[in-house]
Image 1 (tube, one colour):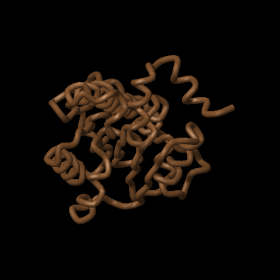
Image 2 (tube, one colour; image 1 turned 30 degrees about the vertical axis):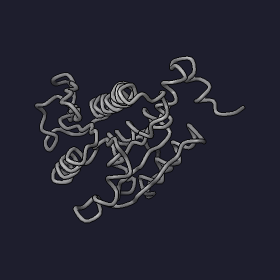
Image 3 (cartoon, one colour; image 1 turned 90 degrees about the horizontal axis):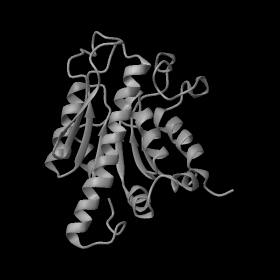
Image 4 (cartoon, one colour; image 1 turned 45 degrees about the vertical axis):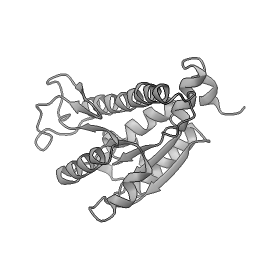
Length: 217
């Protein structure tokens, strides 16, 4: 039967686009409502090399918005998410780190990927990752402001190497994190990463005179 996902993606992407997606290395910091959903969306689009970082385990309060099922309760999120990703694409390459990002371990982890999807809950950790990633020349997609229901529409703002996602008004500390708006934000994060891969790196390769797929992303 082969890899069904790869077979199906050939209908939607050109060979050179698939090569870029398969070669891209994306770090996903946080495997909760944003990270778990966005990681699976990226995998569905052909991204095959992900670094998953999270120190938490799946709890009942996660099931309302995070891409986990009751069978995952009590398991580390990075392990449960890795199982789901491998079920979708048996050839996906995963690096899982069950840890909390800190100023001490970030310098060792950050260089592993040129693109980072920031999906952390802690404001200080979010700021640390985004600032250090940008200073080291990486591309970053980051989100905030997606709680409650209804409310302002989700937006995506591109600021050079940084893409911000959210409604830019909701206080997530007071609005409950519910599946519809959290998943909207996760989808925009995944879309921002696809833009980085298919537009930014294609442009960089063209400037360098490389054939698509030659550059490791």
